[in-house]
Amino acid sequence: MAFGVFIHRPDSIYDDSPAERYQFPSLYLSRVRSCIGGWVVYYEPTKVPDPRGYFALAKVQEVIPDPAADGMYIALIEAGSYLDFAQPVPFSDANGLLERGLLNDDGRLSGRAQSAVRTLSPADFTRIVARGLAEQDPVLPRQGEASPLAGFSEEQTPFVFEQERDRVTTWTSRAVRDRVFRRVVLRAYDERCAVSGLKLINGGGRAEVAAAHIRPVEARGPDIVSNGLALSGTAHWMFDRGLIGLSDDLEILISRHANDTDAIRAFIHPTGRAIAPADPRQRPHPRFLNWHRDHCFKR
Image 1 (cartoon, rainbow, N blue to C red):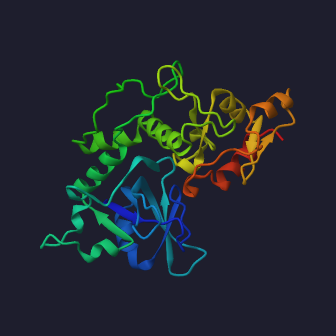
Image 2 (image 1 turned 90 degrees about the horizontal axis):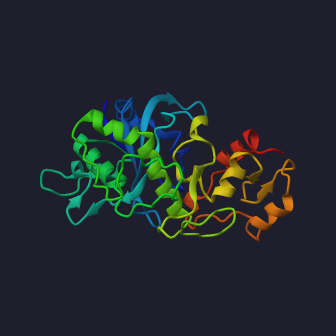
Image 3 (image 1 turned 90 degrees about the vertical axis):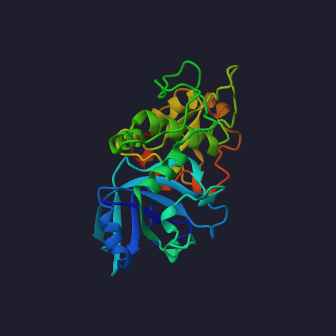
């Protein structure tokens, strides 16, 4: 088992869905196979507008031939393993490359940096993930809400991974994943409720919105920002109970089973559409919205 890097770009010609699958040609088959059962980080190259650098981690479950494309393969991502980083990690900083295995014997960048799939040393993997999961400006939870942060102080120090078991426990912990997911989603929505459009900060400096999964974790929904919405308590309650839903173009749908549709219409954004993140890569994905309409929304 090895650690690895998968290069992904939003305008990719490949049939990729980072939280679920990664398509690649046979050229990289041996490298990807070495990562089966292990973890990879996703990297967005500098040629992409506003590149995020290293932006997520995931676990490779298995590799299969792509039944729809000759000569192509698919790395299937283990359900529930994908996690967007709390903050994207740059390719390099003042201390040099984060992925130091790309340096040749002369200390220069080697040709390996052009590979769409490459192996990653444990030290480089740990360095990148620790940077991606560190919280320099944590988003505080609503006061009084059931917090997934139990056991973590607000003056939290960066993660230190000293043993393999401790590393895996950290990034598979539901408490840690919920905290990171909250930060990523609330940042994408500028701490504003997607349904009402309101941005409310209480007296303690806490955002009065929660990070909601569109397809819940219990239903194999991934911790990816495109499966998230920033919702106030009321909007979250209605969304989870299927009283409201979203079309693929983010029109807010009101269930026929709602008791007071006029009150709901007065509560939602005046445009009748949910607000969306400024970054199109972070918009709710139609696949997750469709799941919610099929399994939660009361038509």
